[in-house]
Image 1 (cartoon, one colour):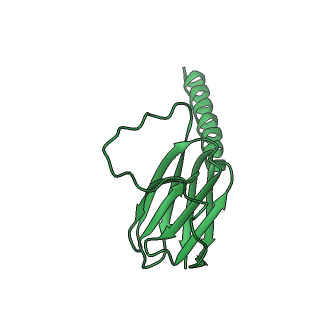
Image 2 (image 1 turned 120 degrees about the vertical axis):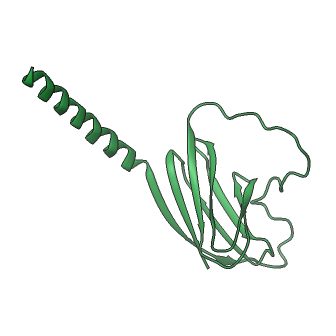
Amino acid sequence: MKKTILGLFAVGCMLLAFSSATYAQKKVARNVKAKTVDASRGSNTNIKSEAPTTDVAESKARGASCSIYFSNYTGYYVNIYVDGYYRGQLSPWGGGTVVVGDGYTSIYCITAGKTLEWSDTGNCFGSYTFKLYP
């Protein structure tokens, strides 16, 4: 009886160790520095769609998802775009999470007054954190 309990305990510990190691590999943190926006550049090629102005339900993404946490280390309101599509706004000194399908290609953030911008690219699998610095 003791051997069975000890065996189950050992198997449980091994599963916990492997699952936490796998989970830890999926967390990625990126520090992104702001760039000044050129005032005379015309339309912004990083933005495919602005914030929605009507109540139209979006379809739910199928498959695996990626969680992107944005941490705003500025005193500005910041608009968030993933793959060029509006995903929300961060308050000054605030944070927020966006959930998208795995494999996103780009993030783009711009202050509400369009004076500072942040951008980064990559593949999103699991959980990412983007820290936006001035």
